[in-house]
Image (tube, rainbow, N blue to C red; front, side, top):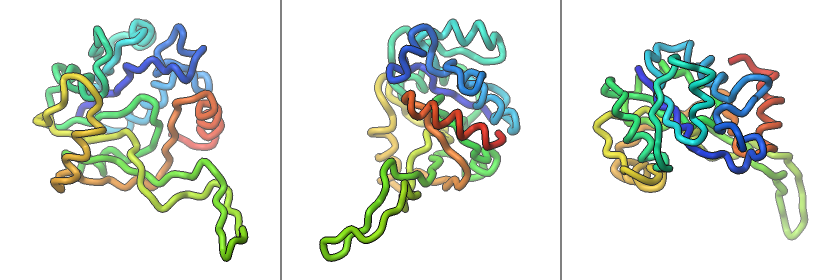
Length: 214
């Protein structure tokens, strides 16, 4: 199997850390964010990792050299365009796609059994405490509970036959279209999943990753 890691974003919400670094190279507990992905991927038979990159991509090449294949955007293409460009480096009929700012421990071997096209989903916690109300009175408080919904984890298994847009995000149109036609399988993940988009989430991820083994 092969994997495309989407790492073309500028990570503006993580500045000043991303003034001189691409988002995927922001340190998380002393290692680049990308380190955590590669450590997880190494457990599975992923023969090739293609980094869909653009902003400050040279910093990644300086660190990882030829361990990765680089698909370089001359201009921002969005997630769909980034995948379409990176497909030039994909040889398999099916391939994984991962957002570089989503860290998880999905069993890729189990997910691969479902075949394309599959989206990984996870439960998630509320950002706020939940209050139950009865007859106009606040009755019970629950601090940041896990919600009874499934969220997109930013991990997919796609067919190379998929028609990705040349520019723009694939999440807004392509995924809903597949779902509406009953052509999008769901892998429901019950392990961990952390996102790193803001300084607060970076701090939370660093604390969390001290307690888990990838």
